[in-house]
Image 1 (cartoon, rainbow over the protein chains, first blue to last red):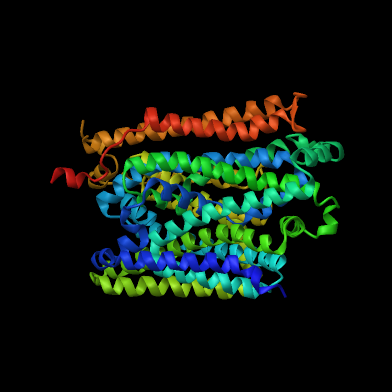
Image 2 (cartoon, helix red, strand yellow):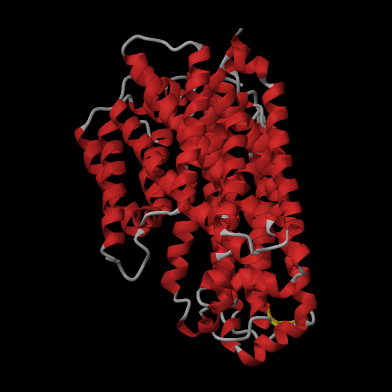
Length: 497
Length: 84
């Protein structure tokens, strides 16, 4: 059992997050009374550049940025850092490719979610429901995995039990997401991103002190582990792994719906341009520092992997070894911030899929419209219930969650990659292509993942994305191009001069 | 700016962004793998780590600065407001 004093920094931070959300809820009462869904799920399209950048970066970087990645860097060395740095493209890519177009279209059709946009583009409720299913399944398993990762880290670093940690930040993030809505999520995300960077810098400083400085640690590594200084790490980092990672955590992240939805949320084009720059600075700095910490911890944790158990134990042990309990209690805020900023965005996106994309649409089909007050009650209820379910599952997660979670990242990318790109940039794309690409692509991806089938030892994302493309093109040829009415919304440049 | 022109501009920006990402990938290859055999070290850390990791980050920042200054244009996202 740890000392309660060491929990104070985390507690203060979490209470701060609650305070921010409560404040945002109070200040947006008026907007929420006007159009609840628009304010709650997309923040009324008012995000500025800084918050847009920080929320996109914080949602993207998760507990594995702090634990799994640096742990691997401890084994592999600088090759892992070199591979991780591919993530510098993720923010400007998604904002630059989709940001403006989706913002223009969302304003035209009054869209609040990515699925709203897809439904309007492909005129298919089936595709919309399939998208919602993919989002709910993969987001929920990701949230559970995030909670578990952070709670384990919390236990290892503070000495308090797994359930104590999970209940502490798990329940708070559910509450603040429910009351703060999208704007609350965005602003707390920005705070989380700052907390992550500060936490990493403190840890880096502590490790330098214990290890006798950067130069000293590097001298040790270059004498004892020269393989860690080579990009291929003497075969531990094959070229195929680099190519896989460029796709999986680089280019294909373009289509992650939790990132794309941020294109609907910002205020004006200036905000978007600023966010691209700030986001690239921030995501690069986080990746560099976090992964570099992993490499340098080799100078502090000098035993073999067996002595430490697993890769995921490296960073917790490094924290305990290089910082006093008080400072360890401070920097644990970093990974917790990374976790809650990912969970908050996913939770809100999941509840918007259920309430807005599925439930409200079913009601709309029957000709019933929900009052603003009903939308409010259902949205708040869906968010909190879903959050509590995820929390409950995380207490003792069943194996099936891990299996789904393994497929989640690449599965989401496969599902939405071509559907979004062709939907927004290719007028001839139709719903048959989209449905085949999403359904077939995810199926191929999950089956090849489960059966460990690889092509040229590349990650299964290459198979998922390739099959998804082929299926799109084949099925698309069988369908008809959509009506001019739809195309005018999405491709006005093809009709007017 | 007319709505169709905004879409033309958005398409142009999307293409430029893809090219920018390709430029970062090419830079990354040369700055990392390309310099991996160099025996120059700084603080006992080989040159390719500095150029391939820190350098790629700085290069990506320059690329986004270029995009936002030279390629991306500001316009009003709400055309309904304009028409009224």
